[in-house]
Image (cartoon, rainbow, N blue to C red; front, side, top):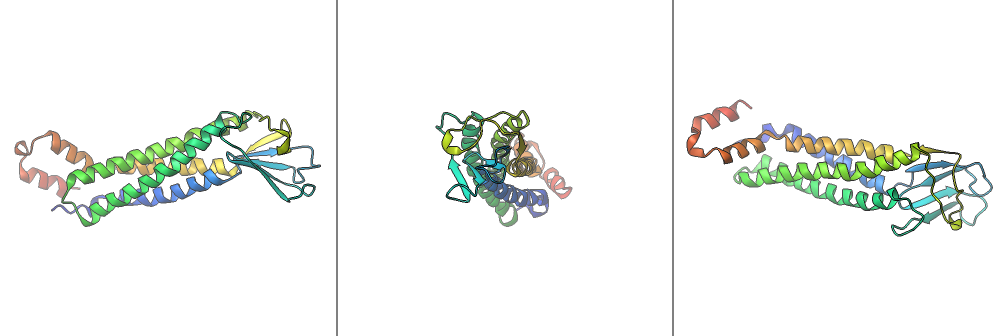
Length: 227
């Protein structure tokens, strides 16, 4: 049985980064501060700032019945621009794929540290984990960059009257959710690269192509002793 624990330090760091990044992606999906709308008319929006997220819009008001007023945005709402329903779908997909990646990464690291009898499963779990991490990063980056582009280009949203939002803000600002989400996406992408670059995975693929009888046993031992 080969001892592999000393070969997976970067992958263990990748698991830690992946868990942290997934938590941040979950927070990003739920935050309202994707866009900050600064308005001139403060008769209803007392604070002068409205938060526009992918699930709801919120603002503070001392005129309406509630201090914090929020209205939900549905995936089927006709007024919502394309980047909002797309973000709703892709962020949920990113959360689910990130969770699956963390579970797969946990099993992969467990095999490295506690058991290496079934090498085929190790290769499968590391490749699956890396692919899921990279896919999660892409699923979150696409809506984040798309919504950030809309903010930077000052694109407006034609909200219905019950939202109490103007046709266009004075100016828009990229919200905290987008900044946190992009940071988390980069972290989880790096985690994916760590798992996909695990040396043992590629070595076993080479061993699968090159038949065992064509490669001397002492050659394999020397290779692993040099890692």
